[in-house]
View 1 (cartoon, rainbow, N blue to C red):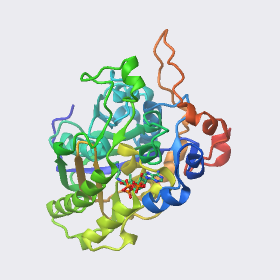
View 2: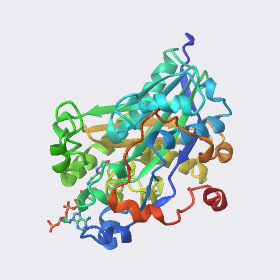
View 3: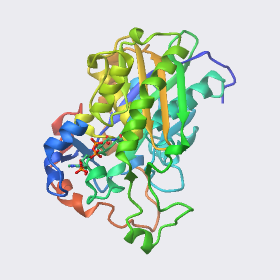
Amino acid sequence: MSTHASPYAHIVGWGRYAPAGVLTNADLEKMVDTSDEWIRTRTGIRERRVAAAHETTASMAAVAARRAIAVAGLQPNDIDVILLATLSPDYWMPSTAALVKEAIGNTKAFAMDVAAACSGFVYAYSVGQAYITSGMARNVLVIGAELLTRFLDYTDRSTCILFGDGAGAIVLSAADTPGGGLGFELTTEPSGAYMIWLPAGGAKSPPSQATVERGEHYIRMDGTQTYRFATRTLASTALAAVAKAGLEPADIDLFIPHQANIRIIQSVADGLGLSMDKMFVNLDRYGNTSAASIPIALAEAVDSGRVKIGDKLVIVAFGAGYTSGAAAISWTADPARGALAESIRPEEITVRPPLDWEPVDPIPAALVEILARPGSPEPGAKAAEVHA
Ligand code: UT7
């Protein structure tokens, strides 16, 4: 590892991956007592992506990661550290980051997962920034990846309508010129610990027939309390990061908030005195992808022409813990480089399976029909490539 400290860590690569399966509000109408109208007006979500049986958190993460490395103009082995934020790892152990290291063809990085729920990507980004500015690393891969559709109770209308699958990644590189993350703010509020949680499977309540019968292997959430926390915290967390960067909210060209609920994003805009055209929104197409939400949105914002060199961006998230996190970023990369991600095809990347072990079918019964129909193309991909 390098021992040369650099004052800055620039974002030099970005990439995203969303599985082809689409779960629409109309599909959910057939599963639970809900309506497209309720979901759209209360959350802003129209559809979310669903991973197929052959996909995992690691496989989606590896595709997003290879794309980010290609955009950076680096080779997988140029990466010194792999940080993967997730609340839906492939296994309790090993870390999903370790699986991703092998899948992307890296032989030298150390790799670990970061657990801070929906704020995980911002937390992991801050860790990567610290490795670089302390001189412990030159190139850090930061990934947010989630496969939440396998942790949802498709009889609980208050949670199953919200979440989706996907992955996003960035590459941070040491730099001597100003740019990259200029101010970070991270908070943890344990009074909200049981407001979003997954009761069983851990040491407190190991998985058993009884925990499964009680449905304790599914995500539970008090939506109203979480909504209150989010609207109270997001603007103040973002403001603190902006202030630490020596900036004012009016200096920010684009806010990229955690994509949980359009009404929460609207309240952040109100709290910051900004119009909605300063807020990037893509939750209508992905739902809430937890730790993957911000890196997917960031990559999509850059690739859709919303970001140019010199822009000031803020990413801001909240989630279970409760946690919140924000970073104020000075963008330094040429957005046109995003096209280099197209060289990375998902079918060329595999996560090595264990020997002599087959998992039971991972697909929830409620999703079997949805995954059997022809998929939508990956965002940004040519339809022919995806269906080939
Ligand atoms: O990444 C962090 C993850 N969590 C979040 O971001 C969640 C934050 N919270 C929210 O986004 C919102 O609280 C929800 C979207 C989850 C719920 O919206 P709400 O406006 O807070 O609704 P509510 O929970 O106050 O429920 C209002 C009504 C209730 O019926 P009654 O008691 O008024 O008769 C619910 O039972 O809406 C009902 N309801 C639904 N109706 C149709 C709850 N879910 C649904 C549904 N379809 N899917």
